[in-house]
Each structure stands twice: as structure tokens, then as C-alpha cells.
Image (cartoon, rainbow, N blue to C red):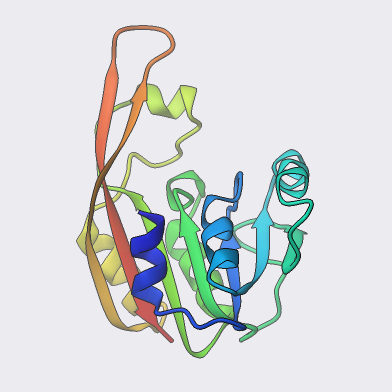
Length: 182
């Protein structure tokens, strides 16, 4: 999934990328390996601290505390932007996409990987999912309304799986990749 997302963006070494909702740094790690500088944004100080420990011997990462509606990055600052398994955790996905577009340079690319629409309610409580995935046409519309062009929403070819901690429920949800250019 990471390689597909990075490949779709056609990243070039030395450019600046933002990883929004960075978590443990799965996407950031791939971007650093490709020679990019990365602004890693998360709303959790604990996650950023974990990342700093994980990548202690690696340069080129700027850690920033921030939220979906107010990213701590100036307008038109980044060449590429990634959000992996992030959108289903935000309160207002269309607004989060608009905010991500705000920080992209003209010609910059936004790539989001997330869950297709699903009905696994246990994920709301156990994984703090705000949204039960998304319809791909909905994502395409939000990208277009935010001003992106050359929008593509496709299947990654992988699924996200989770076992309920409180019962015998098991979720296997297909993952989409959405991309667009400012």
C-alpha cells in the first residue's frame, strides 16, 4: 500500500512532503527512503514522541503537532501530501481535504489511502473510527470540490483487517487510494 501511494505521487528526491495523521510513521519511512524531506503531523504528542524515538538516527523529518482543520503548515508549502488511514478519524472529511489542499504547492499532489465504506460498528469503539469508511465517488467529489484536478480513486488491492477485542467479530475492509493534483 505504501509503495503504491508513493508511486502514484511520482515523488522526486529532495522535495518536501507532508504526512498527515502520521501515527507511527509508516508513510514517512517510505518517503525518507525515497530521499524526501518530511513534515510529520499528528494530533497526538505521544505518537510524535514515539516517532522521534523510532527515527532518532534519521534526519529530514520535521515533527509538528496539529489537527485536521488547522494544519501547522503555511499555504502552498509542500510538493506532496499523504494521509494514510487518517480520513475516517476526522470529524469533517471534506474540510480536512480542503485544509490538505491549502498547504499544497500548485502542481503538488495529494494521495490518501483509507477504508472503503463498511458496516463494522465495533471499529467505532475499539479503533475510534469516526466514519465507517467512504464511498469512492464521495471521495472523488470532495477532491474535485477542493480544487484538485486529475482525480483518480482506485482500489489498492489490499484489505485492512481487525479482530474485535470483545467478541468474535472480524473486519476485512478493502482500501482505496485517491490522488489529485493542485
